[in-house]
Image 1 (cartoon, rainbow, N blue to C red):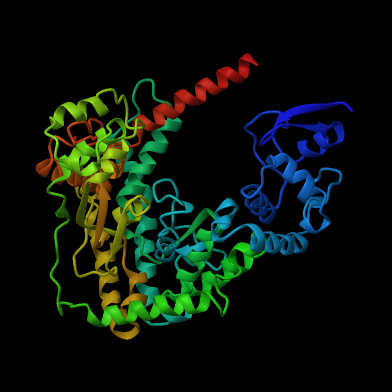
Image 2 (cartoon, rainbow, N blue to C red):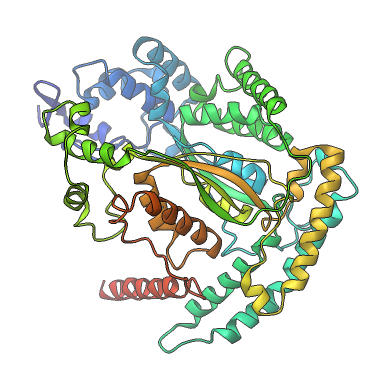
Length: 540
């Protein structure tokens, strides 16, 4: 019988022409050792890999013998159209049987889902983005999108829920958005007057860069209640835990989102989120999280009248023996000594660090894993806008305090330079008054919605030296927002003060003042790339 030879677990496996044609519908190739799955329901992907881990067969053979030939798997070979490929109910049942026989909870990491979450507050968005492992978020940008477009109801885009029914709330929100809306174009024009188009610069790049600068200067007016859109991709296990955490939230909006997200995910990865909110696992887990939060909050000391605090970064804790530990970890893979003995060997730190990192040509040449042996705890005081950007760094531990107004707020220097800071201050201070009223009437959790992004809060990062390299090199770039650039630069300064030899090779940290028109260079690079694409299209 004609066929093709493919290497299996032990022997060459022969596929008939009909089998090869069938496999071609679900795999990117049928004759190479690396291939991807396609046109398969997520539950079947998870079950397939689970079974694959417990057999000597190749994955192709498992797919043919135990899935494509099994009607209960929910795969319906047909014309090839997407609608005839999946019977979700049968696939779900089949997954459960395979999971019992061959897998465990980790199988839920082998299948995932894309989820769009729209018109949620920035406060809820931070809760959705708080997962460090297994969830990849993408959020609407305050730099490229105006947030003053009124909806069909004629109202500005901010969260309104029954928990926020108070006379002080809507007027303060309307004042913030009105100030933002009325200042956008005058400020954009002032920016363009101060930074006219340069020779060789396209009008597209210039307009985009100047508009982004104006929106950067005004984003502090946006309250935490501002509605945004997110795209989330995550594996089943991560979504399950995220739903449980949302169900335990002290915010009604997040608890509602838990139910809404669960209903949608149950249509695409039902087996992986079944336990997220159920009475046996999910509900008790959510109750545990909520009770732990309440009990701990009762024990936490609080100042009655906290004073404003300047923006800044403090190094609260660091490893005093970091050099010895990093050097030992760097040498360990190439030595035959135990770790504790290596840590006692007298080796020149600068020589080892040079051997590790002299050839780094750009920040994408990641610092080596040995740098994870050193850890630092930073306490950061910065505005909520900066936190909003930096919170998305997931390879570290972070926690924030409640968003409030007691620490004061930041006024962008650009607004002051253009003489446009008065209206900004007026709207922000009106929101601060409303926040105080709401805090007394509704509680500190709900009052957070009224706080503009300009107000400062405290949070901590505990990060390895490797992540310090990544975060500080990435976020100190001249095209970045000045608020988070300052945080990244200060973090680097604090580490350099205690461990100068360990950060000597972080040569892509930009400690300069930045670009007054932060996006200009980036937009020019975009123009060059667009020109290259047009040239390639013309050649074709």
